[in-house]
Image (cartoon, rainbow, N blue to C red; front, side, top):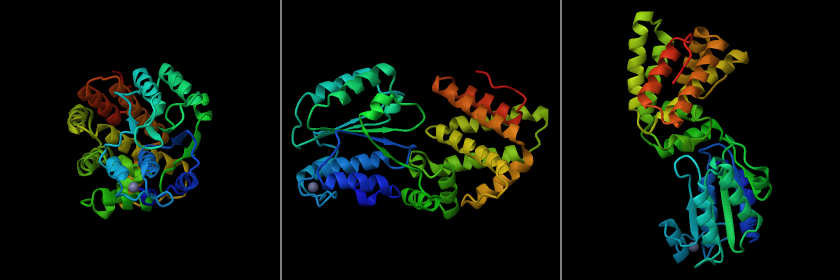
Length: 336
Ligand SMILES: [Zn+2]
């Protein structure tokens, strides 16, 4: 991955490219922005440029021993830290601190990529802060964070902050199509809109499977005036199909939430919105005829509840059953 391949993040690429060109880099950068917009890709492109022995400006040569080691995942001066489970743990930061006390092995700089620092609890965050306050020379720290959890202001102030943004939908659809060439134009446009311009979010799951289950759920919710006797049965069928989507449950819930939120927006803003996906536009216009703002907001809350329950390791099957009972009948309150 090189800077020229990163799409839609011109400001970030320009800023970092200039720093690499001038060989004047901060000791720590904080890449902020939603998931799936290229923060990690950019961090890897930066590391590649730092390590390359024959780089041209910010572009690594791709063929020197340092480049080959980095692309094969074997560069000894690249440390990559990701959350263990749901958070970056204090032990991970302690190990990092120890590693930083030694000089880099082959390159002039060691590059440390710390993903999702917003997941750190206070103890780990304070430990990282100590590293940032007195950074051992010869290390460049690249931190990524989304805006879901607030970061310690003292961490932010010790880093050069580089904001990343969602991409335009046409560009998102183009990237999603390249990631999965089996998707047709409408599916790519739908995913682009549903991921809110964050193409990386469409990567880890089987898009066909998720889109199919999503379509069935929305069709059922939109079309059928389910009679109370059949409601439980319908909820159980949808729940069982949803719970079976193994890797994709979280993205599926995101897609459903996005759909309800789009419908809420069209109720609030009288000008018709065009999402770029004909299917989504059609669904949304039916949704605004079917539900009012309160009902839609209630459905979004039910999805939020389900996500929280899943993060507490509640049974997937049970969470999905309660969720669909609620989505089919907003009068019940979800409880786990
Ligand atoms: Zn090289």
